[in-house]
Length: 141
Ligand code: FES
Image (tube, rainbow, N blue to C red; front, side):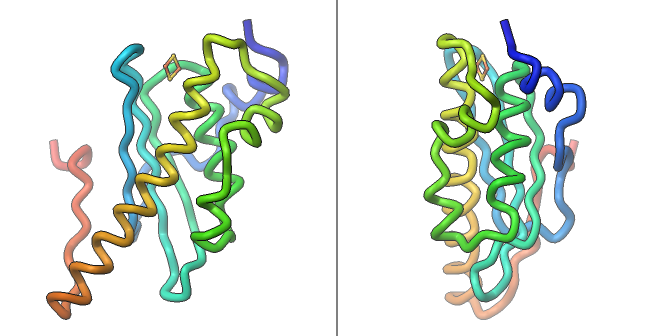
């Protein structure tokens, strides 16, 4: 079902795990297949994504798509990271089976969710004037 490029990345995905010091965490899921994807971002004060990691509980296409997505956005500005489309991810993967396209869409959505979370936290900090402890609920239990 998957091409050799997808299988290669699946065997050795990049940026797996949670990220200490993350200031943007995006969690998205697909109700139809039950897969869950989480992207952690460490964004500098001038809006550059210094580091990105992920945890994906899902299929090979979801895992490889998130691996590629985190590789693509590292070192990019927030604006450029938001321009990453699932079509670019699919291209890097050398194609995905039609029924697995939604997995790459999930990766695009996870980037957006993490950036949104970053802005939300930033707004809170600006309002309160102090930094809030970042809690990753997966790490709590
Ligand atoms: Fe749903 Fe892959 S089958 S994310």
